[in-house]
Each structure stands twice: as C-alpha cells, then as structure tokens.
Image (cartoon, rainbow, N blue to C red; front, side, top):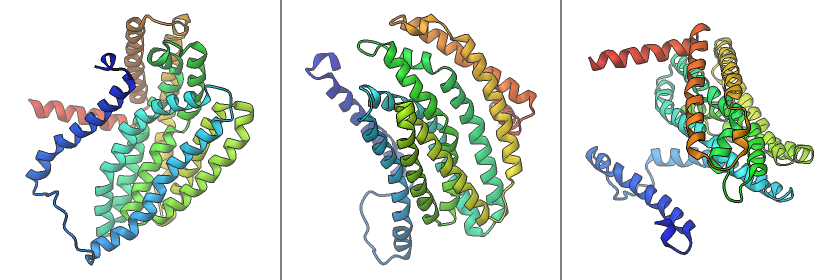
Length: 342
C-alpha cells in the first residue's frame, strides 16, 4: 500500500494508528463481558477518586521525567556532528524491545500482587515477591542486554543498513546501542522497585529520585558529549538509570526495614557471568566482513537467528551449571506446562 501513494511515510503512520485501533477493539468484547461500561459516571466526592487524584500526580510527573531525559538528549545531540540524533533514535528503539516486553510487562503484572500484600500488611510476602520478581527480571533481561552489546553491529546492519544508511551509520548506531544497553538492567529494575513503592501508595519518593536521576543525566551528558560525542549522551543515560535504581533500592530497603539483598546480589552475579560468556560466544560467532556489507538480507537473517538461538542455549546451560534458582524455576514451570497438557 505504501508504494501506491505519494508519501509512503503517511502509510506507515496510518498503519501504526490502525494497529492501535485494532488493539483497542480486540479487547472490547472481554471488557463488556466482564460487566464494564464505557459510559462515564461522575462522582467527584468518591473517596477513592480523591485518593487516586492525589497519588496519580506524582506518578505522572515521574513518567514525564523519562521523556524529558530523551528530549534533553535530543537537544544536546543537535550540537554534535550530523547523524547523531539518528544514531540515538535507532539505538533507543532497539533497547526498548527488551524493556517493553519484559520490564513494562513484569512491572504491570507484579503491581496487583504487591498491592494486595501491602493492603493486608503482609510485608514479609511483599519482600519475598519483590525479590523474586527482581531476580527473575534480571535473569531474563541481562542476557538480552549482553546479546545487544555483543551482536550490536550485526543487528543494526541487518535492520537498517540500506540506501543512505551506510556502514558508518551502522557503527554510529551500534556505538550508541552499546552504551544505552549498559543501562537496560537498571531501567527494568526501576520498574519493579517503583511498583513496590506504588503498592504501598508512595508515589512521591520515586518522582523525587527520578528528578535526581534527571539532574545526573544532564551533568554527565554535558561532561561526556565532548570526548564520546553521541555515545556520551547514551552513556550518561545509562549512568542516570543506574543512579535511579540504586537510590530507589536504598530507600525501599529502608521502608521495608530489610530486603534479602545478598540473595539478589548472588543471583545477579550468576546471571552476569552466564550472560558475559554467552555474549563472548555470540561475538565470535558473528564477527566478520559480512556485517560491513549491504544486502544479503536473508543470509544475514539466517546467521543472526541461528546465533541468537545458540547463544540462548549457551546461557541456559551455563545458568543450569551454576545452579541458578531462576533457571530451576523456569525448568519446573516448563515441566508443569507439559504435565498439564497430558
């Protein structure tokens, strides 16, 4: 359809809008089946509405900080050599893949459970479920982070290197992807820690820390954009995300009195070791001249897909040998699913 109109990008935008409408419409039957209605009901004196209004304002401001970070990086990148904004944009889109699939989904899924524990005053359960959710999220996303770092050049080449997007643009995007990826673990971790604060109806602490992280991003962006150019802006974002996570974790630990940090660190160490070995293997598998060339898309897709599957196998094998708790959980989950089908 795009090839039949004067401005093909309009077709792309229309496709995105149509996709959003289809996603909305697909949920309507279940929405109505469960007794909900789209008809508005106004009761501004309802205590729940008042409480929600008080809580939602800081939460909205916290979400806005993330967009402000991106906006500031874009402005600063405009002072750098041509192509810098493009490199940051494409690399940011790539790290949003694991963040959106795992981080956002896990944060949304765990919030009702944590809220239930908070309402009942069962802080022991809240601590346990928070620890498990964070460890499981790291188990899933850190290897994805390592994969993006190790295979950044092949991934960017296969997805974008065509037309005016040459090898220099591929390397510029890959460099930004390297530094952005260093912050993935912290970004997804923030989702879980923030959900824990929200479950206890504390929306102010996360937004205060988010503002501190914003200031960190600005300072490091200005410091690093000189020597590292656009990669410095990506690195500053990763540093700010890490500061955000550590501060949130520190204050959550104070709020909950105790968190089994030793167990989290032990799991984190095993995951990082398995991910590093997997990443090294992936780099050796796909390091070559093929990824400097245009074309041969099907061949590249085949090599990249095979390498990703092999790397996943290496990661799971090493995790199993390291006796990872999360690996044992995944194995038991698969066994239960298989038994349930019999």
